[in-house]
Image (tube, rainbow, N blue to C red; front, side, top):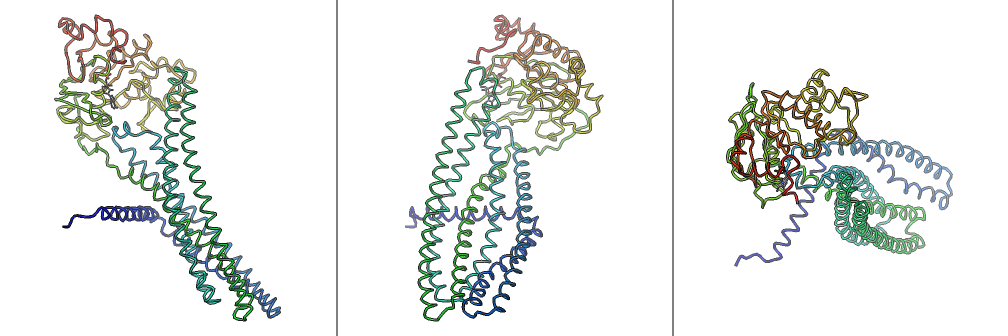
Length: 604
Ligand code: ADP
């Protein structure tokens, strides 16, 4: 009996959407709260400007009546003087209002960007795996700009034109109630057109933003992997792909342009009709002595001004909807709860550096259907060098990612000194456990600044040098023309892969970590660099636990223990000789001499 009709759901949905929009706009407005005082001053300036402007057409009519009807010098010079004073006053208050609103707009934009950026920066790595950088930067740049500019601009326009519209209507009634009624009959027509258009325009503007984000993604992907693109000679294909995406944007923009054109035509046509009716009826009132010519001119001017004010108010609606569209996307990202919250507070004075995997299973959030690690259990004792080896795609780097707490295991636990790593303070854990990735990213700064990264200003040159010595990087850095002040290019392209890795090792060591995780570069290292890195690991890093994802036999055979990871499980573990004697997977890998080159059997 009480089964709801389909329409109930629909109307409920629409209501909910309208409420959501309203609350989005309200929330957006709440971000201007810290600038309350500036806004109040701006509002007073706005009110003064609007009230002044409201009286200008009235005095224009008085000038005309003074000249044409009463032919009175005093009357029209008085009216002209008042007009001049009002104009000068409103020029000043208008300038003040504009400046203050622009300041509020800039402050609002910075406030929103800061909030959004802090939320993005706290997201879990899984989020970054699933979200394209282009989408995030488009939220951070264009969407925040649209929302802050639109809200400040539209707030300004809304207040100004509401005050003006009310003022105009009051004075219009005083001049001629008959003509005012004609005007009022036409207003709802204009409003309906504006509402329909506003809805459509919002949809289109969201589509434009989305298609632009897609085009940006393509460009970013290509620009950040120019070497790969070049090596496949894919420049033309990539350019065509970008052009395709831009064309999609163009098609939506074209729709937007036609929608805009259609609206302008309809609107102008309606304005014209109102003007003709008013002139005709107004002329009749003047000819029958029920209205002075000056009053008719004042009324016509008011009507034009009212039209402009209402048009601006319609634009406020679409502008606010545009801001709401952008704000919805920004707030969605701002409100996202990170899957991993760094709530651990443990900061023991001393850590030994024992790492233990206990029945760890794991699935990447971006690929929920693939179980990458299955019940992985192993232990690395303090001071041990452990080599993680095995076929590509087996899960070695994943183990390293989990120790870094980039992700949390689906089940099982990872312990540092017998305590789950989640329980440690975020910063503390990353000071104690440092990682050097396979292709470390260096920043476009000097080598010294790169090594001192994350130490900010608390880092002396001696510390930088000491870390570089431990990483076997000091010698080559000293031989560079500018030594430690050598600027490394964007993403460190001006130095070799091996040098880059040693700088990255120095950057990791400067925090004096007790556990060092190394994802050995498979091909980036020449044999000289490889030797230097090995020297660093086996010669300089004693007393630290080192887990190295290793591909080269020379690195592996010296490790205290080798853990063979295959298809997400620990297949074997032991020393080089033990494992050879077992004659299992490791022995096979060695025999196939895959270890001395790269293990690429699963790469295809
Ligand atoms: P290895 O280091 O042994 O070569 P990985 O740990 O890199 O292996 O990868 C194990 C598996 O997890 C592979 O199938 C790989 O495609 C997948 N994988 C690695 N990183 C991610 C990621 N960020 N998102 C989804 N899947 C991933």
